[in-house]
Image (cartoon, rainbow, N blue to C red; front, side, top):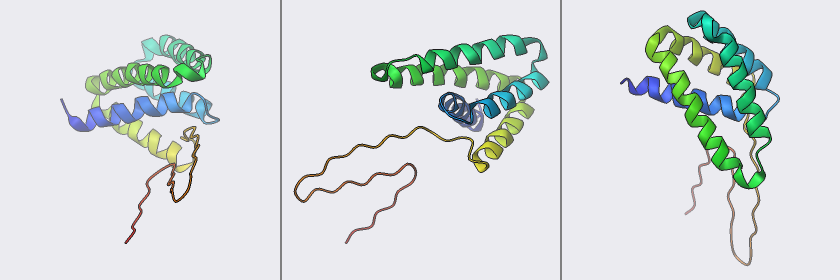
Length: 136
């Protein structure tokens, strides 16, 4: 199996689930449904229902279970997306373009929460993305 397809499906599943609780959800949902419709037009209604069901389940999950729920949903959506890519590799290229456009427009944000306590001489480094620290 092509590792590039696996990585893209993984990123796609993560993006779908991450967007469920953000303002970018409708745009991502619309893009995924449109893309899906080009490759599997007979399953659009099922896809839309599954997207909505997944989002509702995630939004109703308690804070204590949110990480576990998010991981489970990401696995489900990664598998669905990978199956689509394996059936038609053109779908992978189009999905990559969709993710790129949404990220460029700032629609693929994640909900990041930071909390830190520092005592005495302690230090905390927090970042929502890459962080490079060089101390000498």
